[in-house]
Length: 446
Image (cartoon, rainbow, N blue to C red):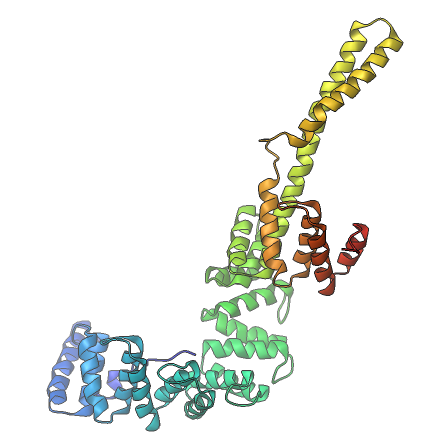
């Protein structure tokens, strides 16, 4: 869960310049810096905090994290809660000082105990993740609750997650829905996505695809990759909205470019099939590969299928090319016999004999000729690789094809026992065709 280091606006604490002239504003900020420097040096805690913020953000002076750290420390030691929280963040992130999770935990605690919501959320995160202290889900739940009750959106989202997963409390989907709603209404992107999921799946509320679509849209527009994928899927399948392939393509692309493996897989399929865009096999292969390399079982299966089909195509093309080539040779032998001999019966007898000799002579080459353009070996090996990856994750289709590959020895050594193993796995995972294939190939006893 994310810790938040909040930047507070100086004008909420000190007089701000009313002029719109940039030069005047710069001069005013500089004068504020000089004014605060004097007060801070005299020990005024609020001025020390605000001066630290100016160093932190480069307002009225150059950015100087070391000076920011120095003045936050001064203010924090006087009990100024905002400074304690921000000092904790500097220790947490290694700004102006070395990373020190123990010190971060210490200062977050100081601020949280004063009721400072941001620090309460940060402290909850440290308990949740075991940073600067042992993992303690009960304490995480406690501090997230404290901050959430003050209206802090990040804590509301975190609290919703704890109710959803039953961490530090019992699973309570209704409470999860409540707190996600609170945070989502404040514009919290992750909470908007989570709320969309709950409407989508009917958790903590009735299924409502239109509301799911609404909240996915809100989160997607803020850049949440998972929401972008889900929104694309809803446009793709007409859930919560009308089917719109162009919008599906748009949101899948957004998600895919952020590295979401599901978005990458679906984008690859759209390019492969030409849904919402012209067919582009290169882009299809690119996105499916990106997804498959992240471990997405469906993409691994899809990629394996592409290689498997290409290997079979090349295998067939290779056989027909050789068949036509050597058939012409045999026909040529026959024609020569007929042309050069006068005894018809003798001609045909000799032609038949030569034909048989020709077939016997060329048969080994039909099977063993190398370096032809239709060699399927590379594609067989790639299909075997990706089907194996997907099958081990439980994908029934991949398990089925992997069984066929082991049976035929494509891309690997033929192994009927292993073929039977994967076909049985496929059937157990719901693919009825696998049982029929198991019987058809006489593998039931393996």
